[in-house]
Length: 86
Image 1: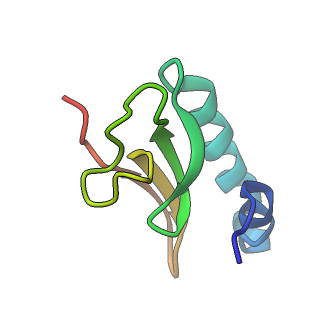
Image 2: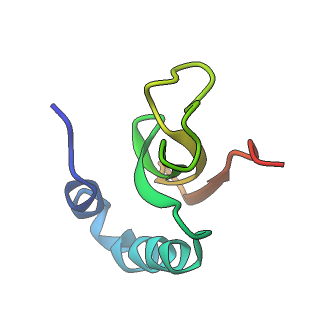
């Protein structure tokens, strides 16, 4: 079953909800033109869609190229830069 971005945001622990949403909104406002929020590695990610990079992710070309992600883990909220773009 595929979750929506909103469902993923709604599942964040209540005590982390505001900072997690603020981080997500800050990232979305500052993404390079054409990049978009999506799912990456099973969580909330930011991707380079196929219309900008048709080759997709090298391990799974049917998926868009991952750019970054955020996660609310056991003891922290993490920003995960993937660094594929040079």
